[in-house]
Image (cartoon, rainbow, N blue to C red; front, side, top):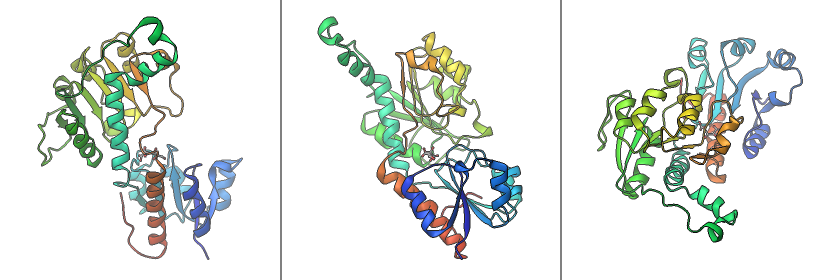
Length: 312
Ligand code: 8YV
């Protein structure tokens, strides 16, 4: 008998196909009546394979009394109420490390694109402005500038290595100081004040909610750039929008938003914002590696073995 699991959303196709071979899968996103679907499968479901931002809280866990494991596709587990899982003895796994390099590539691309305006300059060419109006306006170097990393974890360190190769200086703030060769700032405001580009790499969730608001953006100042590849929730989005509109910061590069995939349309007309549709880890190789790790955790758990990447 294959273990029964629920897949919560339409995610990576190859991963879903393998899950469907190895487990008896019920697809929540295809259910017409969510409550009826949960009632129907509750007696047998032992696992959840989670994809995307759908909230998994104690209430949902309680509707699935046989639930043993929640295996997330992604490193960020902010959509899963970890305390609720812990309280119920439910294992939660994620997919760290395998995505570090792809996300760090995206981060460096956003830093470069935001400071150098490459997407805007490309639009300028396509619109025929080059011949009509002359060269694209000058932008600024990233070499010699300071990149402040808010949340220097494994992804942050991969970003730092790339930025150093571009001649940037690195500073960081974390809740706890780390044994790294970069100067530490005691809080996000000080880090922003000391940075030309501030990049947000913290986890999401209640502890970092709106960590970057008016005070941090004021400290970053009119020549500073903000880049966010973490979670939209870490930045006060309406405040950021206003600061970009009023040019109280120089620009922003965003891969994440509060209510994905809905992006406030006011962002679209801003020439000082570079906007990516949450593509941080979105490569063929990395998404396969993330799926393989998610599947391996489920396999190991249902074989009575220890999972590889347990969060709680
Ligand atoms: C994915 C991510 O886009 O790993 C994460 O936390 O945000 C991204 O890599 C997401 O997990 C896909 O569901």
